[in-house]
Amino acid sequence: MPENTPTPPSPAPPPSTSPRPPSPSASSPSLPSPSPSPLTTSPPLPSPLTPPTPPTAPSPTPPSSPSAPPSTSPSPPPTPRRLHLAVAIDVPGATHADDFLPLARVADEGLLDFLTLGDSFAAPGLDALSVLARLAPGTRRVGLVPTVTTTHTEPFHVQAQLATLDWVSRGRAGWRPGVSTSEGEARLFGRRAAVTAREAWREAGEVVEAARLLWDSWEDDAEIRDLSTGRFVDRDKLHYADYSGTTFSVRGPSIVPRPPQGHPVIVADADDPVRRAFAVRHADVLLVGASSREQAASFSAEVRAEAARAGREPADVRVLASLTVDLSGGEQAAEPGHGGGGPRPTAHGPHYRGGPVDLAELIGDWYAAGAVDGFHLRPAAPGRDLERLVNGTAALLQHRGVFRAFHPGSTLREHLGLARPANLHLTARPTGATA
Image (cartoon, rainbow, N blue to C red; front, top):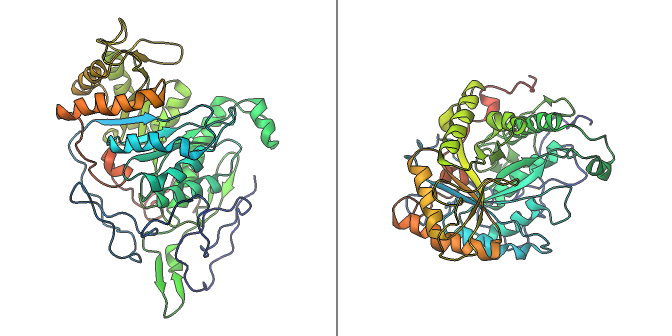
């Protein structure tokens, strides 16, 4: 696909008050102009261009100055190890974003780290990223992680949409990259033939690298908003991405200022060798399927070792066990083969069926043994099981002091104990980038 070719910087008009989200037809970046975000359908959030200030109490107050630039001071050191819980809120057949809002609020009130919403070109349904942008004003702390496919899509638009989600949620955005490998999905776009899984995930890795350079194409203090001179941005603090991948190239800079988190959190499955190769290089949170505590510990050790071989710090990776949970039996004990040693292996991944109490025992046991950092739970019936997860399993873990009593911060990175990344243009550059 053609390279993005923005015009070099020139004097800017008087400042606007909010960043312009990506236009479906505009792939050439320019400075933001006054335009409301199409992703937000609720009343505007306070201080939309100011990243949230790390709280000092369970109920942090918003930033006092709407025009203050994001803080460039280093994030505080990670807190001691803590349990992380996430949940999927997939609702097959949902036709309105508000169908997901009650589930998102239960996850938010239950103090979960983040929720995921799946998406695929192979299945008809609402766009996950747009749905979570709609849910952002209706939730306070829970992270919002949509699946966004990197095959057949424009990397420039993908990163801008995710940056916008981070702004409208005030630093709670994540990204679960997905790929497309079927001929039927390729025909939907008509641009190229289907590719293999290995090729698709290699391209996904390049898209993530390009996205991070584009997120960093605005330095944190690039916005100056000087009314006396009519200058909105310090052009010396805007950077070209100049990234060349195997199937695309992108120049930048982005049309959205640097996200509140610096980079939205990347969440990826690491169950098979191809996806694991992507996850250990690029993901902040890795999801593994395990049917026993020992298997979970083995998988966790393996992916951390692979991350280290890829040049990453293993302590910067969070490993969560991902399993389907069926709590239809209420308070009954786990069925044989589901509780105790672990969930039952199935063709669709590990599956737990039983009560909230035994599930809490399983989670607490695996976590105490250091097998995983937490769990990504996929309710078999979200409308039924999610409330039981929060009011039963999570509440019991809180009572035992295993799970948090309040969110440690206001951003998803703070929930996960991940530092806000340094700007790549001020440090080292990825291999696909050119000077």
